[in-house]
Length: 405
Image (cartoon, rainbow, N blue to C red; front, side, top):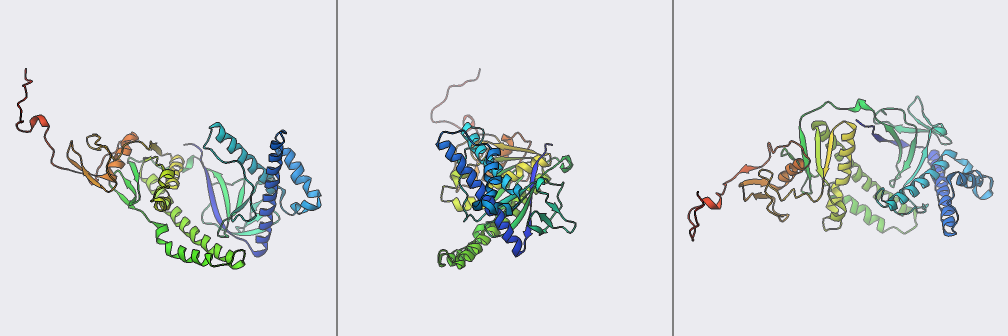
C-alpha cells in the first residue's frame, strides 16, 4: 500500500464576532494575493526578472504593514498572508507545468474578486492553531470556534484550512496522511462496472444500481428559489439573501450526491478485490442534450473516489480506454458485430445465439479488458437458438464442389 493523503472536512459554527474576524482574514489574504499577482504581471510586461516569493513577502506584507494604506494587514495572522503567496506560487507552477505537458492545461492565475462567494484561508503549524480539550478549534486572532466533529482524525494534521462556501457555511479542512493500518482483508470477487444514465452502475455479476437522480428530484425547489432570486433588485440585501437560498439548495443536492458516491464506492471496494471501470468522455457527453443528466450522475467524482479508496485499502483499480468496444462484442464468444443504437438494450449474438443484456455485457467486457477473472454468473444472459454454420444448413441452389479428400 502507498501513502494516501485524505481531506477531512468538519462544519464550523463561528459566532457573529468570529465571522467578522474571518471576513477580515479572507479580505487580507485576497489583497496580498492580488498585489503579488499584479507585481509579477507588471515585471513580466516590462521584461524584468520574475519577483521571488521572499522579495514579495518583504515588500507586500512586512513593508506594507508600515504604510497607512495597508496597516490593517497587521490585524490578521501573518501566516495567512504568507500562505496566500504560496497559493500564488502553486497557481503559477500548475500553469507552467500545463504548458510543458506535465499536467492538463490550466489558465494563468487571475485576480480574486471581493464578490467571490467562496473564500478560504490556511493556517500552518507556525500559526500555533490547536484543538482545545473541549473540542473547539483555536485559531490565532479569531478565538475558539465551535466544531461539529463527525469522526476522529487518523493522525494529527499540520495545517487547517478554513473555508466559507457559496451557501455561507464554514468548514475546517484537514489534510492527513494515511498509513498501512487502513488495509482491508483480501477477498476473492473482481468486478467490472459499466456507468450509465438509466442505471447509475451495472456490475459484471448482474447487479444493477439505480441512479438517484438527485438534481432532477430537487428541480422544483431549485426553480422556486431561482425564480425568487430573479425578482430581487440587483445590489439589494434581499437579493443577497435569495442568492444564499439558491446556493443552499445546490449545496443540498451536491451533498446528497457526494454521500451516494461515498457509500457506493466504499461498498464496491469492501466487497471486491479488483475493480475495473471505463474511461468515459464526460466533457463530450456534457455538450449533448443529455448534459443535465450527465452532470447529475457525477461519474468523474465517483471514479475518483474508487481510485483513491482502492489505493487506500490495498485494492486493485483498473481504468480501460474509452475506445474499447464493450457494447459491440459478445461477452460469451467474443465476436464483434458492430455498433448498436442506444435504444437497443437487449440483443442476440448472431454467432453463438446468446441473448445479452447490453449493460451487463458491457460490464463483463470491461472486466475482461482489464484482465480480471470475471464471469457473467447471475447476469441476465441466456442461450438462445444457435444457428448452424452455412456449410451445414441443407442444400444450396447451386451444388458446391466437394472438399473431401
